[in-house]
Image (cartoon, helix red, strand yellow):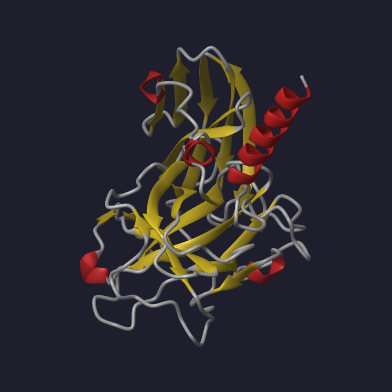
Length: 322
């Protein structure tokens, strides 16, 4: 019996060790102070600028522009916890170098072992907004290095990353996992998240929401993992909870009425925002909703439908009242 107990303990200890995430503060929950403006990646512990002005969002923010889920670049709940970072992955007005990127980096809890296979993942979600973001791109990935980068000594854009996606990430609702593996050929000490490919080697979709002048692809980033255990990495995938084709949002400009109908068996919230992102009207409904828009002044507005149970943004629509 004693031998069996010893074997069980050894197996358990091995499994726990195999599941260690080498990334400190992987979901950006730990911070030194709450963000109150853009380009404050230094608010969060362990993470640093690796080129441009990466942003930090946390529900603790005293101002709504850097909070979670509401912030200056949109509405998005964190994949886990109450925080995430945000970065530009592509500037449309930069076909030639120098290319502007906003990667973020951290030092791993221990250096990688040469010849060992590592599994890497992180989550990203696109935001389309009037602040600056108009586009979706690919090539978002993870680059490992033996030296740190900074705003002055920038992460390279040399069309290489150890793990990256060739698919354009266009989902603005659900977090998409970027995942892969590689065998370490060096004792890398740092991981950097971003786009390390030149603009000509990066594909994109331009949604042409040009207001007032949008010219970049921008993503929220959360849940960064580096581990030797593939199960630990890939078990973090979250499935889409339902088919969003069953949710319809209309605006009738003739009689200034917003209509929503759905067969989702959940209570939803409709929020109406002005062009500055301020919430000016909200209502909770089930199955259908009708909002008389005639009393509002002329201008541009944003309608958002939120699932109250899952705390997720289901649909966004820009409307213009003449």
